[in-house]
Length: 371
Image 1 (spheres, helix red, strand yellow):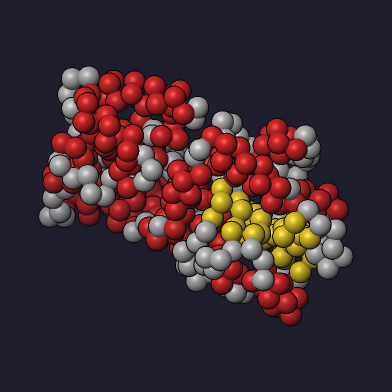
Image 2: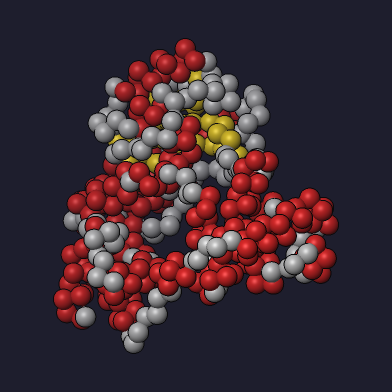
């Protein structure tokens, strides 16, 4: 293990960036806190060039790590991560909202190697290398300094074996004949929209159950979700600290007219009711009095699957998954299949994510023979 592994000054960081740019493959992970703030607090970036050369970048002492984005966007360097999306999203925001390139996600890759596509890094390391990783620091505070020896060891363990794991996975995937599919799959991390913040006024579209709302209640949900998002960002707290999604929908369904009505619903603790209650009522009234018409949005969301189309499609995916020895969810989730049938109904396959990847040949076959 290299002695200069801990980087906590700008000068050391700049030297590291030069070293990293000379690599063909690097492993990356992050440690952060996101329990009590609106945005995550990045505490550490771990990087490994090999089992013998690892680095910990102290992002508490180094406030500007935007130069790390130069590595993330360098298409000549493979960046290995496990379950990459959240790490990449956080890193992107700290590196001037860049879009990473040439990502290798060991979790996704495991699914093409005949392994569990939801496997943890610890289980994957044990499965492929016979090495057990400790789990003692999974809930530690990564913003405190100095780091303990256990924290340092835990952080290094998250990247030290990743280059070897990638080689083993690639060998298995090559044997299975899925390298082309794998390379196509990893392109998902190169989509700009993955790193764009959802517009405040579109937050309501992520609520589960809004398809069952009528146009008026949908309008209430839109305004209330937008207000909650703005309030959470302003106060730098998670939006669930104001109220959770199920509470939001209950408020929308009841549409309380005053503070007393809201209090009778028994949805908010007294302190939160006192702090946010008047604003909630004001937002609902403002939404109700607006001229906004969301009927067309609702029509676009509502999609009734006729007959046994979804059943046939799910059965087809299960059969293909068995044929290729990969998990059904790697080919498509239920939501993916519903969206596919919806796009078919609208004759709008152009932007469907299933038909713009390696999955196209699979589903072209299905539509040719079944629908």
